[in-house]
Image (cartoon, rainbow, N blue to C red):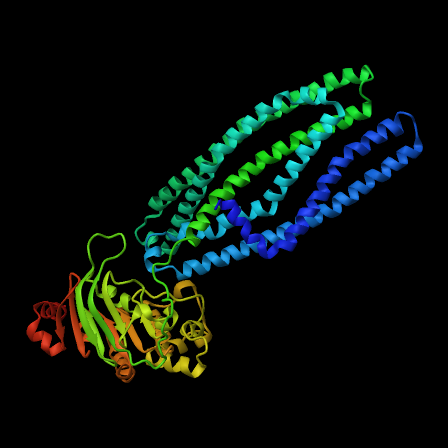
Length: 575
């Protein structure tokens, strides 16, 4: 389906507004076409014979036309803009909802700046065309063919003479439009890249300043800005060259009417009022061509923008619910089984996990230890179905995770990441993020378990302190403890701590482990950590290396059987 045709289907909920705007446009266009006829009547039947009654009648007619045109110009604009804003509202919501549901693998390969541009600038490009472009196009076509018909009926010889230059004008418009589509696609892509650089720089401004990289980042931004500038200048050059040429050709058409039409008035083949009306209709004939030229720019942008929007909406989600999903109970035991798991990230030839077979009993605490990049986080990402296993199955309480309803599965798993992302809002809002119905008592209890209560109470407004974007103003350890409280307040069946105590000091970690111990005895937990002190109390410790489990057991057992575990333990003792 054509991008514009498909876009029109979004007008369906606003059909009444669109119909109202359409008929308003018809009345405005009809008023414009009648106006020269009223002027002709004023000159030929009123001014020339000095007939006062005809002058009064023509004046009343012109006033009526002006009133009709004014009223329906307002309704046309108001209703079309309201309908187009509704389309933009629906598109933005659909894109946002789609982006929320798309898998991690999609977001791994698409940068944020491009996605933001599609949600904002591209939607606005489509909206502008629907608000003005379509109705203007229909109005231009009616005006063009209506004026052409009147000109031919009035004086076909003069009309054909004036239209001699029109084939060249139409050819120029075709050439201009054929260049616009690809160029507007380039502009939108460059704008997306520019937004991405801006977003990366601002979100990482501390790193930029820390490495005095301002000149390098400015050059990167300037280079991309130059590409956007060049693409826009190319478009401007095409219009700057094409439209003056078209203006010149239309001036020639006007000169033909004045010269040839003047002779016909002198020879009494044409009245003065008719010549003036004829010249007005010639302007009406030319004006739609210029409107269509301007609309070609809007149409090219709308097509380029619509294509980018529908690329998102048409993307198939790699991870979705089964046809008849199973719902994970809120009190699920939390047994987790990995059966012959092999995994590699989309687009990567090398595997990340190999031959993973493991059953974790409900209520057990499993620790994962190993070098950076060994695949520890990848194992845990499979439990929540952030990614799908390439081969094998992951089961929760004996049921393949692919059979569970995604929302219920993820609601039953509390995830705490090393890189904590807090939302703008109060401390309470952040802790309640996964469970908006949590009471104040539950929030405080979770914060106390996470060893966050004491520092929260030192903040200006305690739990009602408004945090900056990403938790600015808090230390890394404080953010991690709020994230732990956020996971605990959900009361999940399975807890995942992905190196989520790395920024916590040793004393706080001891207190945190002691506070978590009663909780962990009732829930299945996975802990990724680099410190032996964090993992040594786990029921099972998995030593991961190059995507394989090379050893497993308790802390005491691994000290006797795993050289890699002993090496890690000794390196920390040396430190």
